[in-house]
Image 1 (cartoon, rainbow, N blue to C red):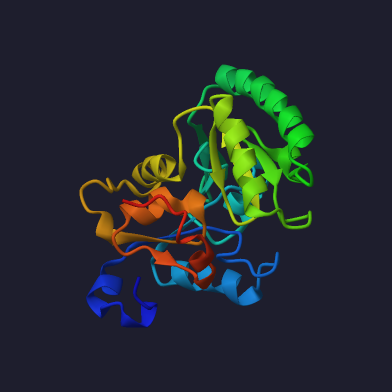
Image 2: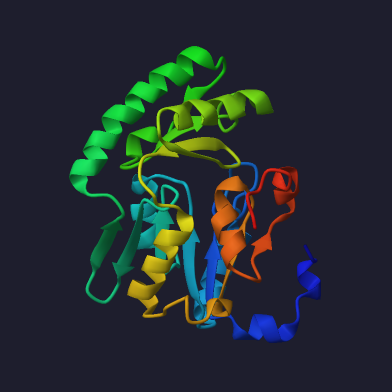
Amino acid sequence: MQPLSQCPARILAKLEIILLDLDDTLSWKGLLPGCAYGALEILQQEGLGVALITGRPAGWCDHIARMWPVNGVVGENGAFFFHYDRSSRKMERQYWRTTAQRKADRKQLEAIESRILAEVPGAAVATDQAYRESDFAIDHCEDVPALPGDQIDRIVEIFQQAGATAKISSIHVNGWFGDFDKLGMTKRMIKRVFSIDLEADRTIATFVGDSPNDAPMFDYFPDAIGVANVRRFLDTLEIA
């Protein structure tokens, strides 16, 4: 890791797309500062593509895609992307899993929920769960007293024992069925929205994030940026 102030100007000058996590990356203590929102607008005004890559639910992402100064949003840790075409006033939604798959996944995830709540004292279903379409979120510190690390690890273990993928964010443990992640859907979104194949040159984009569920993004983009609170996860980030 190097301080952003030491990043060579030639690397920054090449960037065309800025990808950002939301919680504890753009937000601060649960709030989105005006300066952070304004920075997104400035980036767009300067001709850069801007997209949020978040674990937040579909309900949030529809609003973000419509009303924020962004070109698109990947939500629920890669389950989908939403892109609002302002000229045609139409929302494009692409999902990794089919409607039938998502319906079947929901039943399995609800069974896992019961086990987690029974076995992990203090854990709670995330308050934004009602607005999710693909994954299941367990709150470990957003609206509940912060759980100790071993209890967070136990939540991950219960998801995995049921055959689900589980990732830790700065506020939730998210579990899902399917082989998607933030990176896979980000590639799909960039190809569709910007007509750019990242495999040809991934240095035209960078990612800014803060937690273990961002690991695929940190690993893929050579000049990815971790905000200061990423330090608490350095020992657990799965990066090659």
